[in-house]
Amino acid sequence: MDPITLILSALVAGATAAAKETATEAVKDAYQGLKALVLRKFSGNADAATALGGYEKKPEVWKEPVKDALTETAADKDDAIIKAAQALLAQADPQGHAQGKYNVQFAGPVYGATIGDKNTVTNVFGDPAQRP
Image 1 (cartoon, helix red, strand yellow):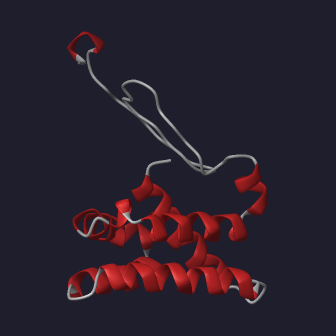
Image 2: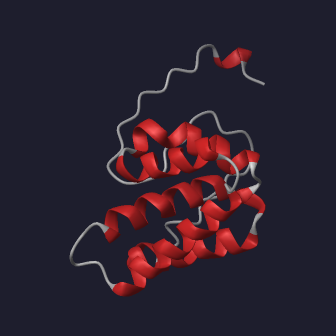
């Protein structure tokens, strides 16, 4: 899984889990730790911080602005953030983590990919002869 997708997935999983009464303190703490690291990266960028807050409530609406902010601040190259995201996903979904669910890798050109559970996707790629 690429670092941006890993961080986005961890933020959604953490926000979703932390909102539930059944969430463990470990999950809540891991989420708050990841969020604090990301906010530190976003320091001085009010729009990025606002996007992160919105992403907690409506990830489908705020995904692109958060993705852009993560890329612009090089959060995807920050080892502490990546490790915190991996730790959070391990806490929030230990079975999926143990099965390697959050370790997705592609070799070669990818023309369409969907990662996650219960997805619905329609891909239309055009003439295969025109692909690189």
